[in-house]
Image (cartoon, rainbow, N blue to C red; front, side):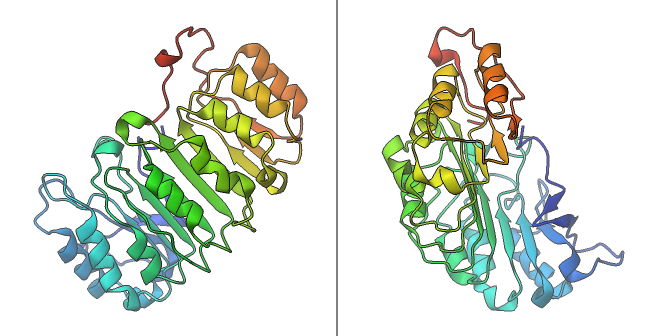
Length: 311
């Protein structure tokens, strides 16, 4: 599961944990992605940790930052962390990539993470190339224009429709990769197929080469919509993983427009029959298809099917 362990690389850089009192020599500022995280019961709050980081690491050379747990004891809103980061944006002119909420389920379940409006991050860092946000509770985004962003990723057990619509309404002319973990309605994932229409059309994202609409209760509907979506013809990779994809959705996908141009098709965590898995491989011989984590196709009750990441 993607949220079961900490990432080891981000923005093609190795992760290095920032520890204020570490006396060992630190790596070159731009050679790593700096991870800042509070341990349970930490004596510092996040603002103090952030200020210590800016004092002890030359912020002008920082290329990538990963924000882990931002609370000391009880879970708190990420707003304080967002405010602290954006307040010092001018000191981070080289920042290219930011991961907000790189937290495992052992630290906090993904749908318990208390999020906030992340629009200020995009407004404060016009040179940002990559933004990843994990968590959905109280998550907000306003439509923005950002000329440099090439990768946008929201990981959630329930992505609010308002956020999906805000992404759809944004002007992101450089965006090459878009990943949305849509999640389930029980945890706030209330987007419907109509909310996804702007991504399927693709006209607002002229450089998009990878599309991920994953971790969804609507995976069959999404697959059927993608079968005739204009955006697919120019994609290099497509991610429909982690959801409740069944033979119905896979058949619709195969019966639509050609997919043989794809480099990769990610369907892991699915409800496909063996016969359909074989059909996919035979129909798309040059495509790298991930069919791992087969959950079985023998569940008569669709309510028994589950997405990979919810709570």
